Image (cartoon, rainbow, N blue to C red):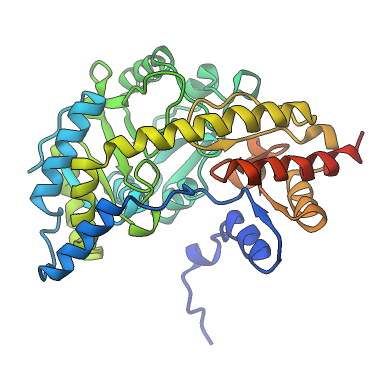
Length: 386
């Protein structure tokens, strides 16, 4: 029988995160630090708005780009929180999660053979999405010695005539690293010098703990070169709603809308009504969640360092990325043995790219009691390697 699955899909590797989810799901008593989602439930007001939309019979398609009322709220939110102006009518599409926004962005700008630079360690879907459209993901390792910040010499050296864009995600998944405004300006200078675009994944923008977040399109001359990707999953604790958005230059948004029309039609109508409520009345909930994450980060990162797993202080998101090199294990061996011997689930760093080897991702979006218990078990585990 002839091959029924396309070659480029056969070559695609399954997500390394999913393997550890599956392993942990079949064990009792596991503390999972592997899940990349808030441990808060979506606020009741947002849930009520969704229920009300059903009572009111809002069960039809919306406009392809999303409800105009929601796009207007997104436009207002971006202007008020991040000081960047986008037209609700022309520059914004409501998507099925930030994941679809990312996919649309890549499909709209990347031709076969084009190169997109990805700063590693990076979210697991970036490189596969680029490669699925025939592009080439050019991986540039972050500077681990400087808390996984960008090495600008390496970044510029990776730019070629085929480079179309740089994909950024700060606060970063999996390292939690923030870039300062000055560092982002250095990136913008390279972007302008080499006539590039930027895909700026700002899904964790709300979860910046120590300094004000800088949205990339607010930098000088960057708005027309930036596709801003975000959503409601992380800041508003709405992961299961699968609702995101993308904002950018009108010509690129128009191109993305053509793909969206054929591939998805529109995002879930009920979820869109919930998102309107989140933007109108749910922003105060973000601050409470952020304070809780910051408290947990301070405890967890300090504890990791105390038990012998060196970890930089992450400025955002809800991930710690400690080095496990003192144990002499690979990141896969460490994660698997920690799960089997102490029932703590973490994600091996190498699933986020080669430069993640020697590290593991730990989500501290768990209760303080669970984090304390996880630290006890991890300390017991690492003691055997001293």
